[in-house]
Length: 428
Image (cartoon, rainbow, N blue to C red; front, top):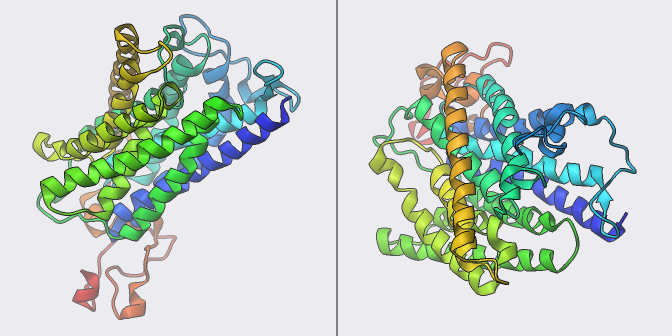
């Protein structure tokens, strides 16, 4: 066992874990007051659900020996059977404990379904959401991660480069978000009512935590404290900063202002785009990737209004589009003789295969849930606030300033009937 590499991977795993609460804050600040807690919970629940699935069968399906065709791992390690604290992953002298590797990869599995939640904010039954991520992680994430990162996965064998998750995480989640948003339909009042973020400082805090944790996400994927990790960490910082600048510049030209929401969103777009490509490019390549991601993703988020789909928090525009940009640009900007038309073709194969598979299967899963137990919250719950409807709580105690937008509801009832506001200014 290499002690330095083991420590590096364990620290990286902790950083990636922090990204899920960071995502919760990022998304939670972007929604309206009445669904802020629900947005937080849609990320936090993934920490519980996916951790359990990972031990039961997820790790084995993802990183077990292939059962044929490079599509899925076997069940030899179901319930972590055969994995001991002394079991090693990798080749000596760089090997690390399997449990360290498994913990690191678990955090990727946790945050990926949480990313989808931003596309369906304000209108989902919480129990149905928990069921969806259980099914989606099992039949979409685990197989796709096997394709991309396991040595006998079919995309891995075709030399598709995805260093830290452009396909398996971001394209995967972005395509799923689009599919589920189409099944659920638009929020009540979409394009009519103002649906502005209720807490931009919370959004900035969330984006900062994501940026911080992403060093573990990206550099940690080297699985060793080496030059590759250093290159990836450096490129992560450069691309993210440039993407933020690109988004802000585009926003200023088009809308006349530099917004905090734009700064946060631009940073995330850069983080997404550099994820698959950062280990294969130099600093100048990182600058190009960041600039393209910042400008194109800023443009892409406006398409939902033109095309008529309600991607609440721009998962499609940032994660799907940013993931495709980063994945394809490997074929254009990769150094050391890796780039070129042939590599670009391989990258396109990986990006669009994952996109298509995730979209189709996610649509089917969402439709099945909607047809059986129901996926979308009722109209009354959506209008009144899904925080009260599903969690019997509110994010802020308005009674302390003389008014309340909602009645106090006992936790056992889950009632959601609205109450007349005592103070119209506070209620607004």
